[in-house]
Image: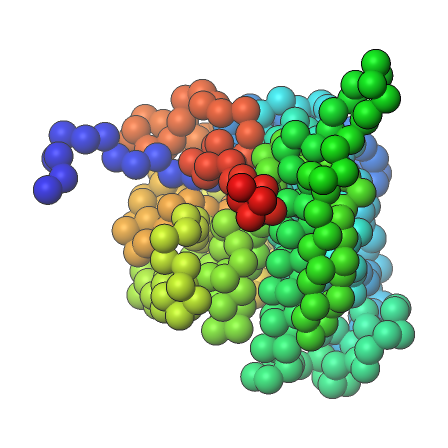
Length: 401
């Protein structure tokens, strides 16, 4: 029986950073600084702002082709932000300039090798002293496939259905499994560093992972010592059974669209069924609601700003996920309502970073703090610690024991 006097569980909050903001006209807003979008200073400033709001982590979005409004390739538009910096490298540059916030770059499993990603994210974890994660994603876009020439491109209309989506997400699951095994391939005390005896490493504590799967064959070990967190935080977005299976089997954090209570509950139930099928109900898993936000002092102002942005863009904002336009108090109400559907946190996407990121950190966060549902200080030095996740032992050390 629960104690009715117990304080409410604290929400987890993260922010997704992409260009000038989620809205295609965001770069034209006052304060957007489009001339700085490809500078380290710009991204360091965003991460610092997120950290002032005590957010759990920041996601750095990425992709393998120029942004486009169509699924089949370049739309030739010149009135939208085009181009990105590499997410992992950006996070590594930002890491020494932040102290507590988690840093989670997006990685496309479909066209990258897990060995490379494992050492890149392990390096980020070392550089940040235990604050790294990654957001795994897949791509069925034909123009991205043509960059690499190693697989047949998706259908020309860019639409993938059923079996094809399942294949991509299945490959991503293998990708994550290889990454996780490589992170474990160095035991925690594998480095001796004893100049007197001339022994830098204990070779018996470096392990071949010998992964043989449908998509990858990787021997290992990694070339990078075990990350400070042991296992950096793995996350993925889901909106369908194939992606829910990956979340249930392979991640620490899953993101589902925060449309409304009923649809959120349905998504949560789908992930739980997939976890039961995978035999992983005892493994901790956070589910975050994914929501694009336009925040102003009151709802009419937020709606009017969104309408003005739509007019600049020439069409209504049509994000694939959920969209909120209103006041910080109204958003706080929505988050608490959505939490009751089975979520433990939220990934918020600022519609206009210059406006909506400070609105999150300086208006929404204080509102949640007043309600007693968000931290008032960072309580851990690692991202796993902020999320209440234990640091796992290396699977190979357990086998040896």
